[in-house]
Amino acid sequence: MPELRPSRRRPCVALLLPLLFAPLAGCGGTDGDTGDVYADHGHDRPAHHPESFPAAIEALRDRLPTLAAADAAARAEAVEIVGWLPELAADSDITQAEWEPLAAGADELEALLPRVAVGDGAATTRADAVLDRLAGQVREYGEAEFEVVGHDDHHDDHAPDRNDDR
Image (tube, rainbow, N blue to C red; front, side, top):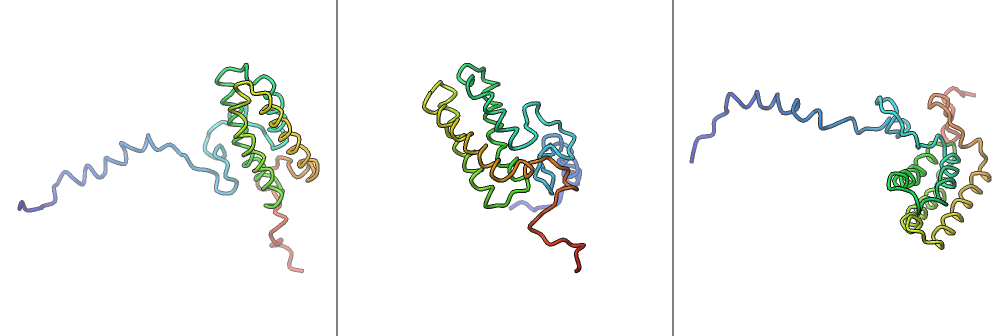
């Protein structure tokens, strides 16, 4: 059996490997506080990224009637907006219990979009009903709960106020 001896070249290779693969890594992370993949990484949000959950509902309402006739890029944007719904809801001031039906509605829309995209009228009607239900929940919870605020201004109603020693 050959004797295993350390090679003098291996330390150089070990130093060079991270340099070779670093450009492939990208940042791929999220802002630890908000989960926002665009925050603090120098990435711009896509132009179609809604600012809030209610804005996403309106964007989908605008796109839904013409989705079957839309090009692939417009369809992909609609899919992305639906995918952002749970994140947008989570970035609001609603509770976990209030978030769950919003996320479930996003799941329903995700399942319906492929059928809407091929012109299925029944799926379009159901998707409209889901959007109506989500908009109703926004009204029930209060539009103010979904206002976009900077993270420093975000108040967590569920955590005790650290400055409140009374």
